[in-house]
Length: 495
Image 1 (spheres, one colour):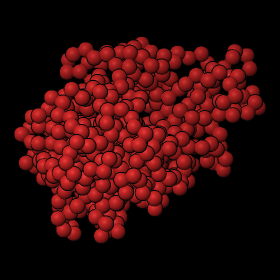
Image 2: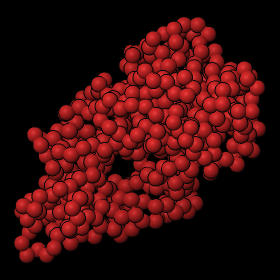
Image 3: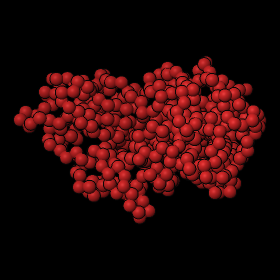
Image 4: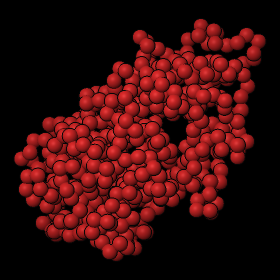
């Protein structure tokens, strides 16, 4: 049932078995997964059905580090959250993303890839994808679309499945309205998490509407599913008598990860190549034995063995055509173009390599609370995103390995603009906010445990990309939904 919090009486008290703050991909997956389980569920969503400027303004903040998307532009505060304008790219983490890697300080999840696979399968159904199958070589054979560097032990083929994309606020609105045990309150904002005592469990969520109505929600279990930044913001701003906020015994609430994106690397193919695998194609990837048509989009990265041997973070590259006459081709110098072009081989094909890269965790990259407050009286965010210089150098080596492989195969060359052995162009952000309430086995090294339960607050759980330990080189939505399904199963077991 979907309700409007603005119609509540002031100082109203709502009760539920599970209260979920946030009506985006994580929160709605949780709520829908807990239907018909003998539990009452309350979901609190800040916005309504459509974007609203006043509501979006609650996301405004400052950026003291590398500039990213404006904080109120890339995130959406309405039913369905940022799936409202999500492009639908889906690919899971790879097994080594969950392991401790000596060359990625802070890496290593307290769960394994195998632990998450059953929930990836569920997430595929939630997101309207084909079966959980990411064997790029098998897909290439089925399509009869050849792979570049098919015989390489350095480069591995990859591909994305594309959700239609599923807009959660539209696709699941009827399901929510027809669920008598799930109450969704629109225009409801959590402004404080109150504990029964210092170090004790959550007593209730204090909530407000922009129109001034105040109310509280009392539950047995509480979940923050507000997004990669807002989960940390609410924790840091809550329980004012504790300067570090709540669930922050480790001091790590706010540590921040992104996916640096680089769009100016150039591949120059001097040998005619069939690139159909690297274009958008619609294929049948059956789900539970039933046909499912889904769009796929090919790419590649470095193999796990090569990354481990060279101590490199991961990246996923996709190819996009770029006209030789284009001014915006990564500012490829004329002399470089001339040197790369093979005399007598005909006109080369210029391709832009788009790299989505893994960031190494670093304490210097973090989100904190600023001095300004929003219309609800909540401190606004200051985001200080920074990247280790080692990451830039390592990614240059990774791109060079790709170029060497193109040359070895006689396909062409790659050009990477460098300065002092670092990428010589600005990093773009993916608007993939991760890691601010990371998962850990040791309470001193993270915010939640392997069950997404806060180390310091027994009845508080966190869902979404904020629990990611590392970000890999894949878009986060599929993993967000998979982990939400997993958390729903755990919550059900606790009653």
